[in-house]
Image 1 (cartoon, one colour):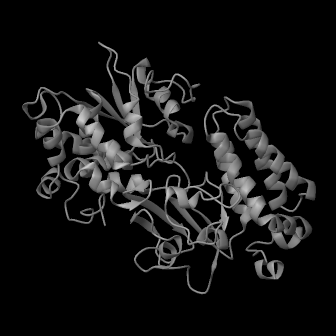
Image 2 (tube, helix red, strand yellow; image 1 turned 180 degrees about the horizontal axis):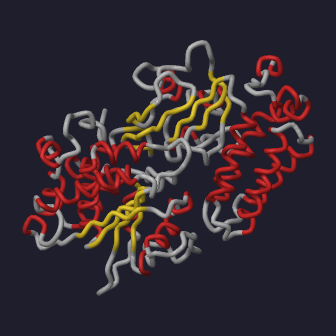
Image 3 (tube, rainbow, N blue to C red; image 1 turned 90 degrees about the horizontal axis):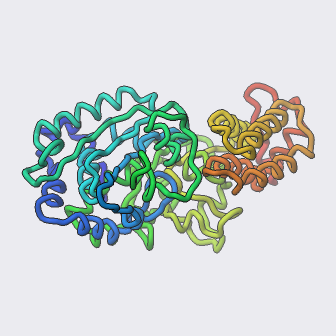
Length: 444
């Protein structure tokens, strides 16, 4: 079942003419000509679609929170600041089929009563910005944007904005600060963006993939979308698969596919690269807990783990993880967990905005300690110090970046403590170029 990528390989799909020929913009026609904004919102609520940027919050419910004071503009902002290590599905969608996002923006803006909406794109993706701007110009030339869309009296201006070049700008309130021309620091909440967002006006911030689902939902109905998937994990999900697999890439799955099937099926990742075996996996981008092979394929109750929000989080920490942004990073037995954790810690230390002391100081401490362990100068007490620092960061910051930095470290030590200890007791072997941690020897 393909909702977002059904036509993605069609020659010329990035152009208005080909997209329109294949049924594009019919959701705009249906919504604007035959539905009220409230009816569009209701269909999205019925669909059960959850935010695809990481949090997984029900999209229709988020829309229903939008304040509607008289005489005050409302805004829709598309979060296309995809910067998390291991995640690249929004990038793929925007560059390949830009009109799908544009159509989703029009339908969603109509539903929310927004007459000016924004797509905030990761600043490094300048060529994607050019693709989107061309698609917007084509949509406007054909009467789907601008004044009096399709003679309905509804007006919409769509603006593409280059991001501030910081991972923190992917957090919705930091994004709004950056969009206003300020430094991308997260805001204290409440008030939430739905009440006071962009320019202190009611604002909804949604992810690229989330918004791109709305044309299908409007054309086919919320109930039809809800019938796809499993439980409260409805619909399909784009997964960015990378690491030690035979077929890295972006895959659209029906939520509920077994994790083991996703890893080993030729339809998806094609299995672990030849001659190697699965050691560990990060299921939802660098910010979620890492799990060893035996926990990523089975739940705490020894049932097959599914690619869904509920199944991946089953049991919570330490036996569960999160679907997150769908950044699926696979590690075979040659991967050094300590080195990987250091890479993640370096990223979060570098990307912290520095506004909150636990995150500003704690991410730096974690990187320094991990650097010591990885480079042969660590001590056994450093391992417990890392756990202590991660606990002092988690839950003590304005935005989730602190948690995102703490969880990978805590989970790596929880599941692979023996590997950290080996780095400390075997500093010469651990620091040798190309050294491989002796998993078999320690586990057996």
